Image (cartoon, rainbow, N blue to C red):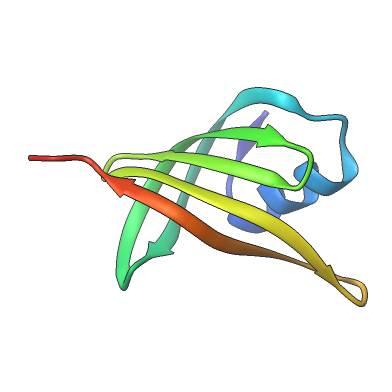
Length: 80
């Protein structure tokens, strides 16, 4: 499996039995006003850790009505 969007990662974190396993990815995310390229996602129940070329970003997944939304809670940019 290769995730092609943050929405796919959100779906799997909510609707699959996730145990922190890492999945290949190829999508972009917005972090602190910059676009980062995600290549791997560690999926847990309602929790995402995105490994990007620029650093790592952590999201929690909340549900509002019937809509699942990832909220960026922490990130760490790689040092040049």
